[in-house]
Image 1 (tube, one colour):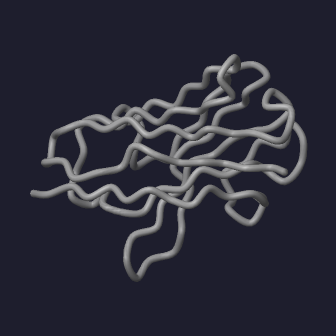
Image 2 (spheres, helix red, strand yellow):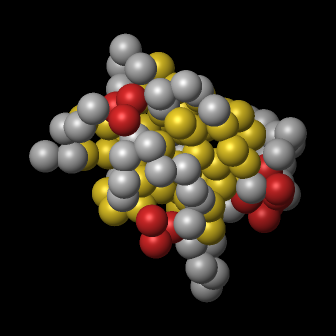
Image 3 (spheres, rainbow, N blue to C red):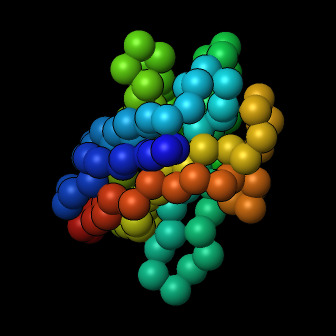
Amino acid sequence: DVQLQASGGGLVQAGGSLRLSCAASGFTFTDYVIGWFRQAPGKEREGVSCIVNSDGSTYYADFVKGRFTISSDNAKNTVYLQMNSLKSEDTAVYYCARVLRRLWVTMEKDEYDYWGQGTLVTVSS
């Protein structure tokens, strides 16, 4: 079974850092793009970043460029999201997800089929 397990959320002050992890299992890790998404209260879920595990290519939403870094450890089937210079507007539940189709690169949430359970990030100002 395909499974994604997100972890690493917590409470942090503005300007601080957190690292999220997404442990994946049940599929060939390097065949799929893994994305990070977030959903703040009352808002739509939005794409934050994604990584092409076959070649390490990374993509970011404009609102996190220069602050967040996505990476992966193919030996551990794990994707990380290093979040620096956090702002109060980064407060949200963060989800990792696997893209629907092999080697398909997108940050459109409707193109992802398997989702982790979410981890809450709260940034206090």
